[in-house]
Image (cartoon, rainbow, N blue to C red; front, side, top):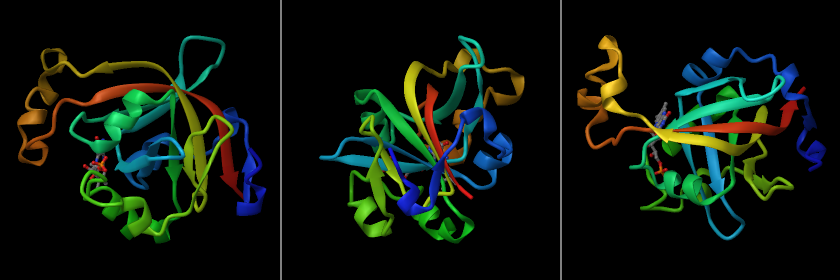
Length: 179
Ligand SMILES: Cc1cc2nc3c(=O)[nH]c(=O)nc-3n(C[C@H](O)[C@H](O)[C@H](O)COP(=O)(O)O)c2cc1C
C-alpha cells in the first residue's frame, strides 16, 4: 500500500533502526486488529522484534491478555498492526491503554487517523513506524512455567482481573516508516 501521502515510506523490516526494547517499554505501541467494518486497538508495552522459522524471517511478538477487547479481534483476524506514534501522542496512548473499546468507540474518541493495508489490516497513519504482521504462532502464558522472579506476576495488584496473556508471533510482512 502506498502511504507516501501520509509521509510514510516502505521499509525493509531488516532496516528497522528502533531499539526494540525502548520501542515497546518506553515509547509503547498501538496494536490494531479487525476489519473495515469494526476494529479495535490497545496500547502495549510488552513486545519484541526478532527472527525465527526461516532465513531471517522478521517477527514481532506481542502479549495481549484475553481480558482485552482487542484480543477478540486478534483471535479472529489473520493479522494485526503495530503502530509506534510520535511522542506528542503520549496522552492518546494513555487513553487507548486505559479504556476499553467494549465500552466506547475509542478510535473515534481518540481522533487517531487510520487506513488499511493491502492485507486489510487497520493501521494508524500518524505513526512514525508501522508493522503489518501476519499471525504465525500463538500460545497462552502458562503460570507454572514462570521462573522464580516471575512466579507471582499475575498475583500483583496491577494484574488484578488480568488473565495470563496470549503471546502472538507475527511475521512482519510490510513495514512503513517516517523519515
Ligand atoms: C503503557 C501501557 C502498556 C500496556 N501494555 C499492555 C500489553 O502489553 N498487553 C496488554 O494486554 N495490555 C496492555 N496494556 C493494557 C491495555 O492497553 C488496556 O487494558 C486497554 O484498555 C485494553 O483496551 P481494549 O479492551 O479496548 O482492547 C497497557 C496499558 C498501558 C497504559
